[in-house]
Amino acid sequence: MPTVSSSRPTRESPRPDAAYDLVLVGGVPGAGKSTAIAQATDDLDHVRAVDPEDISWWLRRQLPAGTPYHSYRWLVHFLHTVRVLIQLLQGPAAGRRLVVHDPGTRVRRRGLFLALAHLAGWRTVLLYVDVDRSAAQDGQRRRGRVVESFDEHWHSWQALRPQLVANAEQSGPPRADQATQVGSTLARSEPSDAVLLVDRATAARTLRQLC
View 1 (cartoon, rainbow, N blue to C red):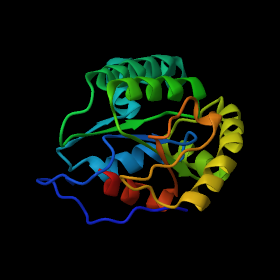
View 2: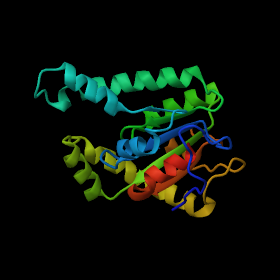
View 3: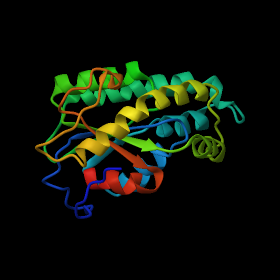
């Protein structure tokens, strides 16, 4: 699987040579996207991370104790999508990075994010966290939320993953002058979109290197 090698960024000094303003972190529910985002970006002032976990925690504090997550999951995803769209429409800023959690494997939502990103001038890279089915299900149990539609997400991921693997083997790690592209399953992805497929163990490190 491709990796990116660079020096570790510091809190005071963002990487001036980073090729990408926007990192979209995807994968099946339970893959470890939120964990990787938190580990990679929490101490980086130049990075804004947009994660539905923030909304979920806020709603949990507002709702009566014991309210099941599935009853307000739709609201979490709706508010997260609105937050992402607002950030994308504002456009990139010099020296700033945007990291977006793409919950699940919904092709249309990812396509919307990418289309707006392209229109607003973002330089994008898609980082997919690759785990096996049992690891993803275990990740859901550990966080206390099992996604009822997981089979649907897993089916979508199984259709997408072979293209990502083939692309990674052919292209290697992305550079500022050489982005990679996969097929139409990426939902209107363009040649400016670099694509990385990483395992859970290296997701946070790779994401940090991209920031």
